[in-house]
Image: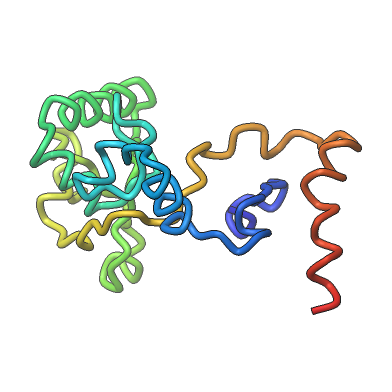
Length: 166
């Protein structure tokens, strides 16, 4: 997040103590808390299931297409609607292949758009296999661009001092 959004000020309290997402889920399971259904279905995260995660990659959206076609089609239709409104392609995904990078045509629709037949859709791309329990903050940058209060700075970053001497 910091690399993509230079003004972002994300905090990672669990990482400060060395916990991965897998560690946290294991702890919850050990206490008898049921893991959210999306994890057991092989998705990276449990957020955004109502609409599908706009930060999900090609493999994620291929899995949504295959297992939840109504959700997939609703988001693909939204891409097309926004494309019509903006009068230029609006997509969530990019083709990361070397060929696409060279041609500078990295846009990638969820499903084919009749007005833009030269832009690929995810059925033409091999996505990475979706593996469960991928690291995700689950908040998609909520308040990351806001200034931190002095108290929040102390709570979230004051713990960093203990790592500086290691």
